[in-house]
Image (cartoon, rainbow, N blue to C red):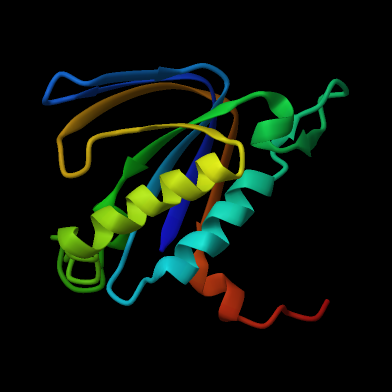
Length: 155
């Protein structure tokens, strides 16, 4: 499972079904699931995301988590995070999880974040959505649940 975390001062989502969602200061999180992802991947990412210290403190240092800063998360499912562009010019999305696998994982991610005290608003799974955001910094962080299985490099 992959997350793209964009720190924002505000963001707004409009889905094709008319749903609208809006957040103030916080993160827009694009979340993609791939074949083989499990609830363990979700638990790992929820813990990392809830504790990620990329919000500024009073001194302007990235020292606060989303909860410490009073921020909120706009969580959007994004299967295109698993685009494969190795061959040709048209991406393949064969590595992305099928909707019946991905949707429960995205829902679980939102639920786990809420259990950790994070205010989460979600997009609409599988819908076309327009997202407007004002990037803060800009600060963009990528997290892949596979990272937890890779040994750290020695300095």
